[in-house]
Amino acid sequence: MSLAAKVVKAVVPRIPRPRKAVLTLTPAAVTRLRALTDGPDPKVIRVGIRTKGCSGQQYDLQYATKKEKFDEEIKQDGVTVLVDNKALLSVLGSEMDYVEDKLSAQFVFNNPNVKESCGCGMSFMT
Image (cartoon, rainbow, N blue to C red; front, side, top):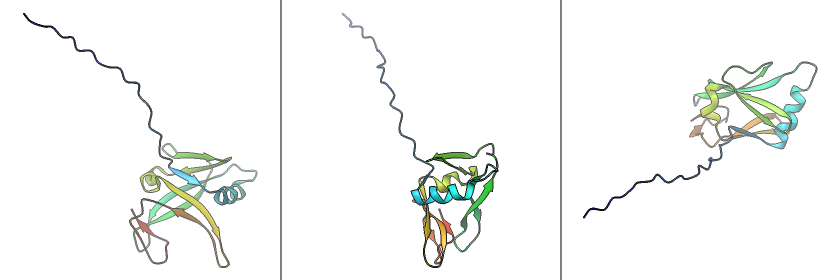
């Protein structure tokens, strides 16, 4: 006597994993970006990376009038920021802040991917 068995594939509903944000903006950064991009001509800020500095890479912020083909578009609190496709892996999960003190005013990136940075803090390595 033989027993027959039937194999049935169980259907398990797929639960989408939450996507890690490419770049988040602090309220101070949103306020400063809004002041920089408001005007009669539509402009956005493009965040990129270029090879420069002691540690090898440096953030590069440029005005842009349109989105390039592979740019990642971040919209937060009414502000749009583009991230250059070549910088996506270096910037992934970062927080962009705007800091003012007595001697300077600048955008600061809190990047979890940075493995080392130079003493002045202007360049980094991922």
